[in-house]
Length: 325
Image (cartoon, rainbow, N blue to C red; front, side):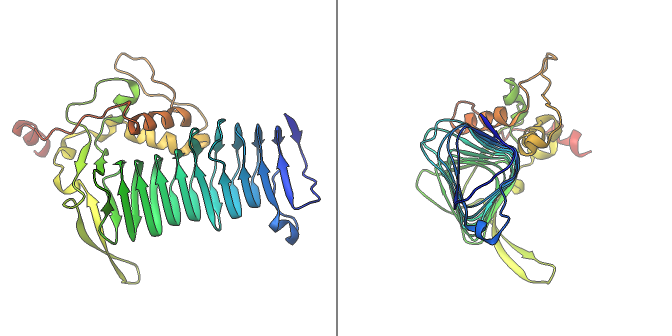
């Protein structure tokens, strides 16, 4: 790997292959605003990257600083090596990563007018005008100003004027929001896993009997909600929440689920100064809470390798009495 401490480029494109780029790639003149960046195999960027178009054509590529594309960030779909973005990624136009065999890890937020992702992990939130996600994990929210299409994904929450669902999807938080009623293809399923015992599943232990996933009825589990802004403007949205019908939440110690540790570690990524783990019942440690391990864990849920039990509706009167005294 050839180290580059200084970038001296005379043409309108930077091509990198088998390089350790120690300096930032930022425009110094107005002419360099239109400069494209082509990334081939085995490249590590230690600082920020700016390009008109940024094209990732090969694998084993790591961006350790923020990335911004004035037009498009595009990742070839047939890449086989690792692709990792450790900090925020943005584009004025589009971000496209429709992967067929390799998963891309975005360690922080994504922001672009158009976002199209397949087989990607996002440790933060996705912001865009139109967002399309297929077989993705997003620990934060999916926020679109026009439309969000979510197909077979795990997301924290969603908020958009129009939301389309397909496949089997999971919500990490209690609710999602859409101005228009959700639309879905036949056989679409939506589960809420805010009360699932993710910590136990990550450690390979038995789930608490009072925890599990909740299957949501897309047509019935909605409520029209009026949101009032600081300027007294109002917005009417459809809230898709399980909070109105989950009494079990009051008798579960949510801290013991350790869900927040998984989501927090998966979202903070490289910002965490040390590596943590969860403690098993026998005193041993789980696998380290790294982005790679947490990403694999959530994709195992998505792929059905790890099964989450259904939340039982049976709570004894004595247990309710004890918790509400």
